[in-house]
Length: 161
Image 1 (cartoon, rainbow, N blue to C red):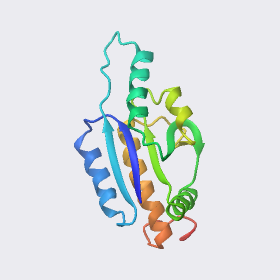
Image 2: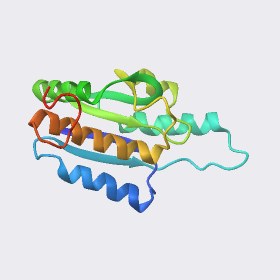
Image 3: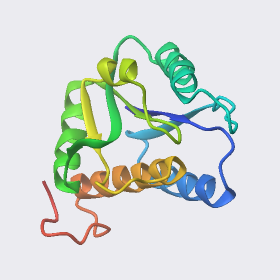
């Protein structure tokens, strides 16, 4: 299975790219991460942010495969624990679903993208910078798979789900 991540922004700081690559490389062959960055629309002092979000939403919607199980990340979405993420990952593995995680730009995701999502999750009630969100997603997916595999990486309250 491949977990696809569509993320706004194609020019990230090196430490973000390196961090994502680190966790992606640690994933087992049966559960790979595939990041597809989408270029951000230009922003300026007088930019119409609503129009920018609309254009970015169109880019994201166009890149979503029809069979994907879309999960949008939004600050106000449902917070889930790492253990629940492991349960969800186990379900995706067993059912053959193709998960796709959507990460917006600096202003988040547009409503059209949120309506396309089957679930809306929050990584935190804090507002995270969109580059950091992709790194947190990669680490948490690796942590979830380590729970499933019974690896000692996760030192939370339960070792296995």
